[in-house]
Image 1 (cartoon, rainbow, N blue to C red):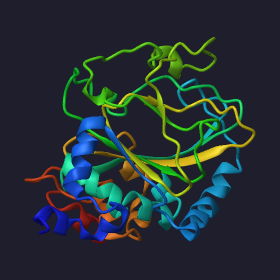
Image 2: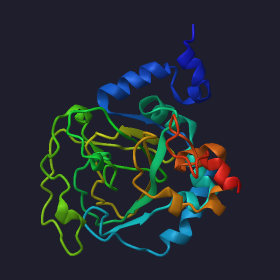
Image 3: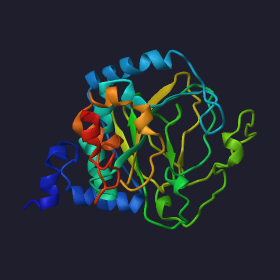
Image 4: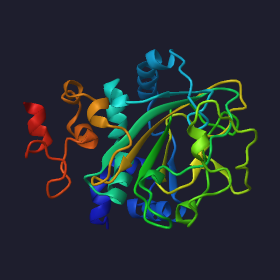
Length: 288
């Protein structure tokens, strides 16, 4: 018999491979990540690539080792097309984000990352490190990694350390440091090589979800073609978002978004009243 939780997530059952949502969550809690292959249709992937093309064609490269000097990044995606709002509010990603972070979770960041041939490995990091809460601790984030292109062993597939979301370590060999955010500073060698790396190899249209405390990094691209992913990242409703969504997605654009997407960028309330505008629900302010 289906449990209430299974019934709540019946709309995502087509991607659960015959398993219950609770079973997938147990795996998520154990390993710190889960992967679902071929979630997005070819038509959706084509729409995403078309929406990104004007920005990726500018070929703006990263400013430092963390962003990647042979990598293009496109930020503020919800202001750049409806297809990105749909991706941020995808029911499969939201099922895990809401289960971990609460139904009033927020979209902390949403960006595209295109790694070009010749790019070196990114420093190791975990996505909720900015909260400065010593490990081990519960995760304060869920990150989605949507493979817009196929990600392979050679083209820079995201590298993860399974189970590392439970580690007490705030720093590991090859972890991101202050110099990695500075212009002109380059690492001379990959000091983060280790035997327990798993590369998130995925067909185009696939989804990997990772806990905010999972150690990971963008891989080196030793192929002859770029690879493209989009990563919406979610946080609890009572924490500050990485990207200032109120400015990144101005009101005139927010008005056009689906209701769930608006809630994710901050047109919502964390009980009892966190997030109000002039004493009212932010949706009322948007109506004015």
